[in-house]
Structures are given as structure tokens and as C-alpha cells.
Image (cartoon, rainbow, N blue to C red; front, side):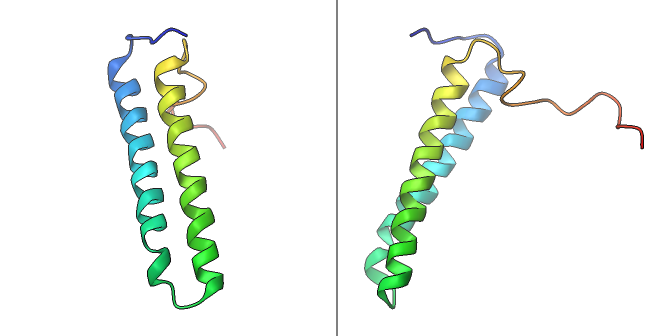
Length: 82
């Protein structure tokens, strides 16, 4: 495994996005005891697990992928023609 250091702005932005997803996941898991019923507690559990997995995947993709053009895309130079 190699950590790439080119295009630091996009890699750092993707890593911060992944950390944000992990933070939402941890917050969701911490709110399980405050859920009013079992169904909402189950939803909070699975939302938290999903967000943490997505956050870890975003962090890993940001720093381990050699080319980020297909992952974190820049906006097009010109607006698409209709």
C-alpha cells in the first residue's frame, strides 16, 4: 500500500469529508440510548454503522488511490450543452 501525496487539496478535502461522515456515524451511535422506541434505535444503529463504513472508505480512497479524477471529480470547465 502506498500513500500518495500529489493533489493535496483534493486528498485533504476527501479525507475531511470522510472524517465528517465518521463523526455523523459516531453521533448516531451515541444517540441510541435516547431513542424513544426500538425501531428508531435500530435505525440509529444501522445509520451509524453505514456512515462509519462510508467515512473510512472515503478516507482510504482519498489517500490510497493513485488517480482521483474518477473519485472526487472537479466541476466541468464549461456547462454541458442541452
